[in-house]
Length: 167
Image (cartoon, rainbow, N blue to C red; front, top):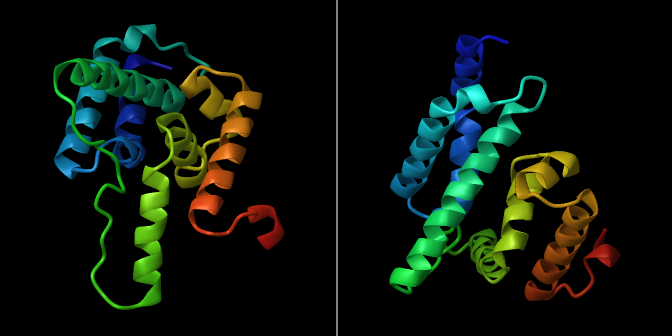
C-alpha cells in the first residue's frame, strides 16, 4: 500500500474517529480537537504504520494514547469533571425513554474508564474483541472480562441485577 493510499484510507476513517472521540469528550469541539490531534500524529508518523495491520486499530490506539496523556497532565494540574459522552445526557420531554436515556447515561458515567472504553469500542463502534485488545494493549480474555463486568455493573446500576436472566 502506498503512502497516498494510506492517507486516503485515513480520511475514510474520520467518522469512526469522531465517534470514538465522543466517548472521551463530551463537547463536540473537544472531540474534534482530539480527532485533529490524532490525524496530525498519524500523518506525521505514517511511515511507522505496518502494512498488513488494521489502520483503524492503529488510529484508535493513537487517539487513546493522546487522550490518556492529556488526562494525566490534567489530573496533575486542576481537578475537574470527566469529559465523557454522558456527562449531561439530559433530553427534555416526558416520555419514559427520555428518562431511561438519562439513567443509562448516569450508569455509564459511573463506570471506570477501562469499562467505558471497552463498551465504546465493542458495543458502540462494533470492534472485534481482538481489535479492542490491540487498541487497549491487553489480552482478548481481559477485553471479554471487562465487557462482562461493565455489562453487569450497568445492569446493576439500572436496577436489573442479573442481565443474563433478561436475555
